[in-house]
Length: 299
Image 1 (cartoon, rainbow, N blue to C red):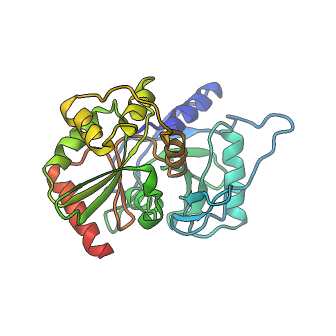
Image 2 (tube, one colour):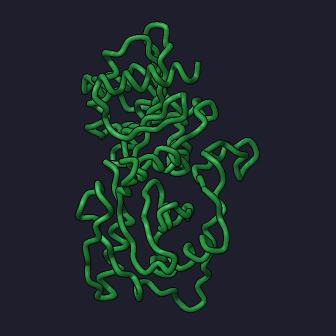
Image 3 (cartoon, helix red, strand yellow):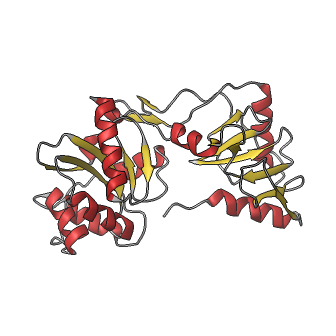
């Protein structure tokens, strides 16, 4: 499941400052109960601390040259204009919450500033006097602005994924394609695998992403090092049969680093050829719709 570490940090900072929670209601039809936390005195920077700017994020996620020769670095930051105001909001936000890593700060058409922390979006004012967790709803169009923005910032260039780090499994003509980050101890991943078993003409690239349990890394290694890794993965996830212990140069650290760059914070996380991303075990009809839609767009 996906966690929201930023929310705990914000609440901890608010508690430390002895602030009071209030309730803010967005214009209808936004749901009541959105929480606003005062942060006026929370998380002041330590003496000598450097506050860095967070504005100026680039276009939708893409792959650029990495820090080492030949290494792929995947950018997931997106932006809608920078400027001194977003620089200032970013700097103030870091002062309030020095434990959080900001990906980008953007102005919205609603008089708010959108602060991106990983794949989460937080809203605030120009002075970072309060923060709010969404969803942010456009009352005139009934659009969930938060969800649309998260879909945008989660977009990647599928053909730039390092698929050599994934376990490949093909059924039928393999015309439907998806890449999935999964942990071998993830119950939702196993549920997804049962769903994938019933979808014909499918190519699945599995990035084994051991983040949930101490033995996840061991299972990931044994499966990757099996004679037929794709079959070994399905045997474990669908039928509960583990391969024998093995030892090889499994790319576990590379996959973990890739997931961090892509801000994969929970499993399963699915990436489709049209660049879209979805988190969670989708029901069969919804998963098939994503696969068919993605295949048409990328074809």
